[in-house]
Length: 261
Image (cartoon, rainbow, N blue to C red; front, side, top):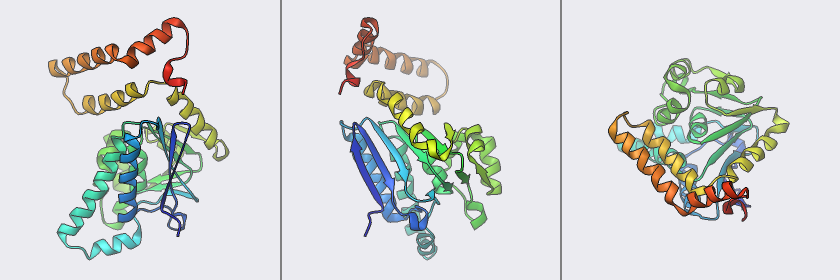
């Protein structure tokens, strides 16, 4: 039996691939657990610089697996909450992975599939990809994915697409901020590789710190506390070995050490 998730690592790039094309890479409790563990592991692997989230088949992810949803319909309140918390943990683990995470969207991303895309730092999509927050059409809501979706596309677009359940194309996904770049299907790998090359030129510790900075600043009020926090972070980074190496390399007109390996 094919594993529902596979991972390859080459040249500092880990590619996590959803391999359930027969169900459009929909996720169930098993896949959720596997993805959580894999992103936790890759986040701690010092040999990994970038994580790519990809999938096989015509769809990126159709969201929740229907058989899993049928099982949940018979769960107790406690069991339903436990399952929902497992999904929340998976999304949080991807969102807070200290490595840059790049989603490569080749087809439909629906419901929770949109949540997966929103959790990633960057997303590139084929111009044939389609998206939809379709939960309300099933009489449910995109609750667990909502923090990431709102952070990606804002409240106004969320109101429309969460309430109508309508599908939208890749151009609209880019316009509202869900994806970073849209290219023809046959240029998707090229777009992915170009983004990876850009990510690999940057300091890995600085990238992890920048991701954390986004989370803290996004959730903080302006004022003296935030001023002190941001000042402290840049002071620490400037004084770090990586910060000193980056500045030295710039002044010496050479590539920094992290691009040599």
